[in-house]
Each structure stands twice: as C-alpha cells, then as structure tokens.
Length: 64
Image (cartoon, rainbow, N blue to C red):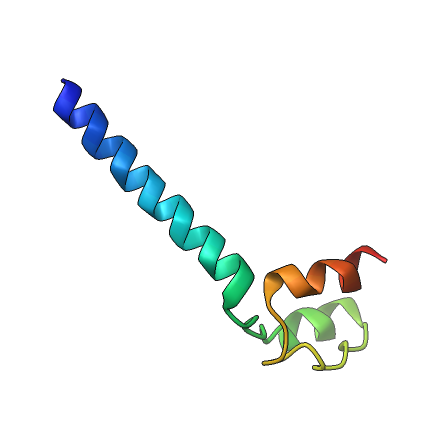
C-alpha cells in the first residue's frame, strides 16, 4: 500500500510540475472559433496574442 501511494504521489507531482512549466513557458495556441463567432454574430478579436505570449503573460491583458 505504501509503495502505491508513493508512486501515485510521484506521478501527481511530476504532472503538476509539467503543468506549471507549461503555464509559464509555452506559447498560447490560438483557437479557431469562426463558427462560434458567426453563430453569435460578434467580431473576432485580433490575433495579436497568437504566438507571442504565454498563459501567464496574458493574465494582465484579460483581467483589465
């Protein structure tokens, strides 16, 4: 039982480190919501964020 808990904790820890690294280091992937924009009748936001910012960098843009 103890070995299973240690294995599970190690796996969870590795996944959390990977998620944190992704949040701070990976570039945001742009999503194509063309059908959604057409359905709602709204204009698309500019694709300034595409390929330039990480998720951490975009927090200030979307919160203000």
